[in-house]
Image (cartoon, rainbow, N blue to C red; front, top):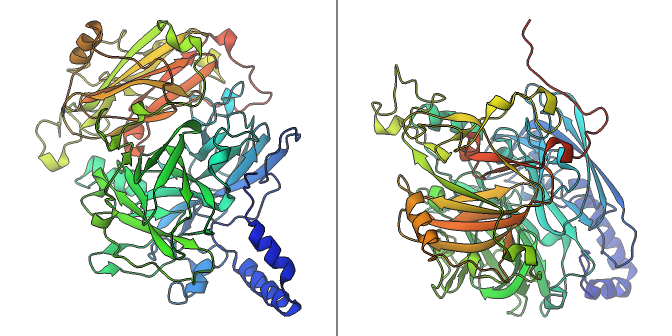
Length: 635
């Protein structure tokens, strides 16, 4: 039987053999730890349980209070000089430097949600921000029939005003490793995010592991030393830079320099017992363009799932995870009883400052010490097989792309037919007078010095502008003329085009999306996330360091792009190779307005996305009673 509770059978047996003296000692230790409220170990919710066949679903209620907060507050007392103070209630040490952030219930990351398939999820978002709105998106949850709960401001709902509460209510229908995060501005990069795990009684890979523990969930962030909005304003209006200095793992980390860590703040620690196999669930809440290479010293990783979807197991030495992606892997605790570094190595925007981090894999009975081995950015580059390498194509041996994986879920005949809707999505950075950043009369993009040039990320040379009211919940108040797409606007290669970029898709259509990273300006990497759906990755390839829409269309017309129509892997977030393409298919059976966007915060905030309207207004789920409305007002 696979367990996800936090105690091992061996520990349970030992408990009953303890003498009264030992029992008393353990009780005192437990009392102290409870008082200190160890960070990242939430009070166990009644819905966090082993998921059993035939068990009735539960109603799982949570209250999330969102507020401005800071690392290294008064709650931390003498942390990190007195390391136990770092575990005090409401203490968020971060990397040991004071920095503003947003928190949920004064935790970083936010409280974990761990439930069973079929449970009802009720989350009250209490906005305690004094002057900012917010929303919450449940990343990876399809929201079938509950599109109003998807949490996209001005698409599915009005933003949640300060000092008000919004109740999200939906069902945990699709199992897997997901997470939740703010979808307002760039708040999630400053702390409003947390894990969301949906387990099921019959897991297709249950024979591959012995334990699926709640504490073996990890969420990684590339972490700035100032608020993301401060960096955003500096980088887009001034000469600021995009690089990230460090990485956090479950809210913990150190700011490593060439001479070692500046401050000895706590690291995340994951405990295993020799002889058992453990399922780990890994989530990227990346902010910048910082894919992260993850490895464990002395161990290989048996990758088994991504974005909540199982694939045939692949044993690798490291995994690269991009913003919005999730990967599950099995770790076999078969090595010598010791402590081992779990290494996190940042790429692209994290490379200039060599951002890296470590956590600790600790075999049970080992002292609370740190592993041997130097902690450097270079040592995070684990040789051997790597899954999901950035900007790679297929057939590269030890570099295994997503397109080369085989899904466990059986094929549906619908995936194999000719698509009803085919949408070409070329994108890149463009040197255009984006009116949000370059006034063409005073500081046009072509004339300002290079350090001040703002290159605009766009799809089909169009920037997504959010509508003034959410079309899902206030359809009668939306002027149809505000919508556009590449078929309705002209001259966008010469002029800045900004509108509510949208495509209408008939309900029941087989949709094929062709993402093309032209990479004419930068050899970057963009992880695209689709709300409301998962999709089959039927083709994925890199052609060169750059490409064009015309080149990919010509290859397709000549039949030179082979689609994988059997066993194609299933994802909801995919990194497209620079100078290459990804072809994704989904069956449009979930009516609603669904956002599709680059998951890098600054790119999404700059409008690198579009909206799919699936179905007509008559196909949409009924608007919930008393659902909030919002609009402009001019007297």
